[in-house]
Length: 290
Image (tube, rainbow, N blue to C red; front, side, top):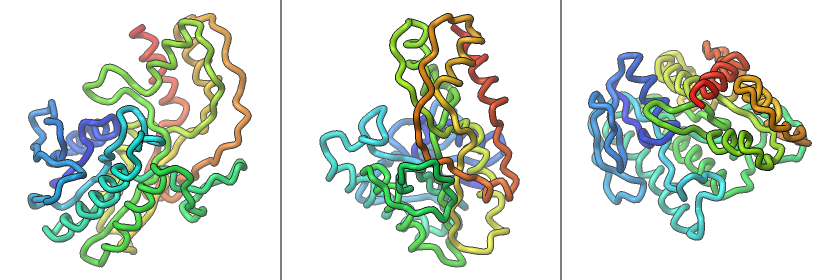
């Protein structure tokens, strides 16, 4: 399968590209940065582009987001109008261009940020209320709606609402917890936090799964939650302390509450994330490098 991938040099895109290549798919990046991997074709593009000239392909995976570096929520910085224009209009134009050239399946990487925060320990299924309270969440919801509006029997769409993503991306030297682990080792104050997480490899496996199961779907548009763990920062740093011998006191447990994403719909397709075992393997591998 020939897959077009946006955001391929970002942390999430690196996981997705590696998974697609390992499965034998042809990959073309649409983006501003040339890939390091010579197996990947490259077409210059960004979300602000006026025109989009796409090659023939069976699928598009869209995970690019124009934002302030290092930030998603709050990624608009001091330019909310520009953030909306680039991401909402750019995403809509991209999906329309894909449909026009004959792409059969688009996968959109959305976020748990689309869900309403009701201040309770709610179990969030794909049918839960969507009422984002951040501009980032509103941008993601607009992308979902743009894709759904274009779907027909000849052009299918899949939205993956992903939670926080951990793991060391391929060809990267840092990960989302690099600074947290450094601060903990250094004895700096670490604030309590609880959230939901999934390893980047498991999210990439979800992308590959919905692409390969495309012919079995019964609806032109589907939404799936992609989440694996409910993780308190105290438990994460306890694993890290055990692996490194660090004696820094652990932060208190977070009070919560947080919505817990239910990924049963994706698991019915055969998705099997790594759970606590994969988290422990990652932390031990990171600890061995320190």
